[in-house]
Length: 337
Image: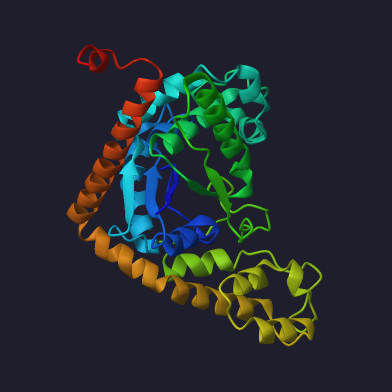
């Protein structure tokens, strides 16, 4: 089996964007790959360094969302990044292979710096070493466990290419040590927010969370952007510019008749939103039922995290034996030969 490495930063509960953008694929792929799913708490600290409680408290929330979405601990290892010291060691070695100029040129990093002006200043003048080195840390996450495949969205492709560059340079200097991981790009495009923004996001407050109650879902859906040209209930509208229709399509809910009725002015927005809210609640019900189970069995969740972390640590320890040998850092091993 090839190995998949994937994961998320524990910055809050997961939403529909996460589910359709990555989680659904992970659930489907876990039976065909040796799957390691990372809770990236160290990387979450790169822009939450002054709020460690937030990161720590969200580790378990993220694990609950993983399990609720259908990640099966019999087929996937869920592990905590900070408990794999080999990754930190490998990050240091990799940091010698990447220039600051290359890190600054990473388009995803440049975009994220621009999005965090409140933390790093309007021109990024207060950017930290840890934040800028995020792609190096990510490269260590992937290679420390001999990752073959990394499922990502298109915004993360620059990070995977940077990992491949690091691997090539390391192998050139120290001999064949790592394989170059391949990106697996989801066929699902980035999920839009309720406000029509191209990205559903916590920070933009335009998300429906997997754990949202029926009342919360209804309240959020009622605020969703619709066709601005539809003024009255019986006005014909264009469903292609309506976020309500967008989510009907996402969950495949009665889309043909909704589209037809909308175009003919036979469907009011309020009724359409209420139908969507109910359909979303039904769609999320199995996920929420699994979450409720694990919320009532937190000891089981902790054991899943411990076992997953032990499996990841064991893999990383084996990889680092090879790394140290090739870097001539296995001093005491050599002295015994």
